[in-house]
Image (tube, rainbow, N blue to C red; front, side):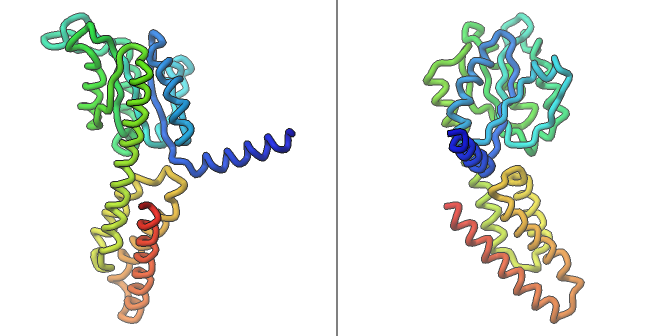
Length: 253
């Protein structure tokens, strides 16, 4: 019996290692946002290698971890008194989350913001999330009131999944570009490879793609310094790598 459980656990671990990584970063003061995170983590963890980061706990422990995978931020609304138009637009109490994000590579890891609040506050509703979206240049994916309803939960799970699908489409775009570029477009090859690295470096299932693109990058970078015979050999190798990428592109459809 124990052996079976061990085997199942081992299989589960192997499956999780092939899952796309996803981090939910949140701060919760009244418990509403934590409650929502606890609930949404269940359906998301069945499809992603999910990590939960509690900003309040990190501050309490003085133990901060860097972002290392695609991250969705959940931020409630706590503002100074006012109407959210002429005044009352200054964040209070949740500022450690904003300060933390300013130290992180949000261009690479942050994929969106989810806001929560109380609709009784009209223009102040989810204003902090809107501010985060503007400051960090990432979309506000969704909002929910207080602890959120079951419908909110289902809706936001789907929104996050669609956001990650759009990330996959970007990968396909750059892969397609690489499969059509000539060996002698070295600058464009390097540019596309770097864009791919930004998108897929934290996902084990795409590491083979990343290795192929790096090899193509290296060939393109070195080709101008080779003699004619070596260039012909490099060209054949490069075309072989392009065929590998085309196959990977087909597998992603």
